[in-house]
Length: 302
Length: 292
Image 1 (cartoon, rainbow over the protein chains, first blue to last red):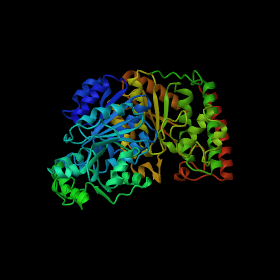
Image 2: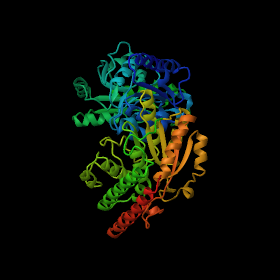
Image 3: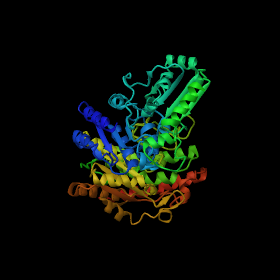
Image 4: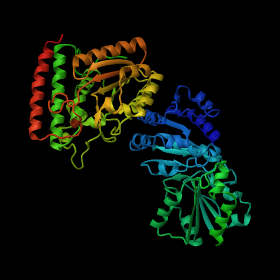
């Protein structure tokens, strides 16, 4: 999604004069086009994320719209208090872009994996998260963020463009119908459901995507479908704590919806203590491949 | 950088102007001491440490367009008192300091008050916020300057030094960084807890033109202002003022003590404080009359 993001920023700066792009010294062979398009409004703030976030708050106070770019772990975890206090409490339109959500940085290892970013950002006041599903979502997400007066977080991840024709980027999207169970997912990890090589299983699954957090009101036809099928699986490349399943369970309970099966498929961290590609970590967590297929079969047929 | 004062006396080096500053700081101190007494609250020493600096910036340095950021938010009573002095806050609002439902909490609030751009209760944010505002003003082509007052204790925060690197690298000469160097932090002296000295050399090495001043003396602050103007004009480096101060300045029982950061005053201590302030003010006025 990184290339789509840089293209979206280059397009955006042609239409707005108030943007400032700040990188935390990352983006080799990625942000060069942004640097050229932004001119003096492109700033490499160095490897200093705390300063970068407060700096952005100060810029926003002066009427600019700063976009901060770094690896998700660095731009979320290191300056978290600055995000909370300087940006969110003051409701400033600072746009935080984290590349490599989930296990996106693969073999780079645990320091580069963002498995808590959604939960931490979702917990902040006034913060709205934008979570593209596929490459085609990035440009509309960027355009929406540019219009959003709130603080935002954009979680970029590796793409799995397996969805075919899907509705435009939105807080809630029904991706496909299905007969027996409902799968609700966040980000490209949802594509792994399409890659199981089991068409019969896929036909059984009604698939929904969450594109923004906090959760907007649940669509009526989603609630109806959950009441009808009584089997729900949530899939996210994130720890369970503070993730989508927890957010959704609150929404369902407050609306009196209590499906018989409510399964949360999440990142498990590093159960074996070994490292590999993003795909390898997803498989180890049961978010891809045979283990994912087994879990989904259990949910819809068990 | 234009350093001509656009507020208050036109020529603060004159006796009349110096006397005016002394009157203002006396009034501001009386206001915040009354607030602390009424609220039975601490951080008195922190406000006494920076009262002259705040008054000097407001009445003898800043223009209407400039921005002040109090990074050492725990001294906000002094800032509230100053904002009352210039009419932004009412005396009734000052009376609500610490009260249930107040707009004036013990540390700067979010958003509500003109003259307080950020809630700075957490240390180590202010210099970066100021850098952002200064850079923002520059990108907008505005003449706005940003004045940031940090404590010395908050120089322990790594983020302050990230900001210092950035300000020097970007040559943000529309930003003036003042350090309230009272040499006392949370529960000890700065040199005992996490030594800062040689602070001037550190700041110089980071790329600042460093000016030292007596943070309680308007004459010294005037000289610092002139020195900053000269340096900004000739060197193009950002400036940092080490304002040497005394925590709890002017109140004998409080002066230069860690306790003055925390302890409230009882009635007799409050009266003693007012008496000593009045004596000091009379002496300062006499001194001001002899200023050239």
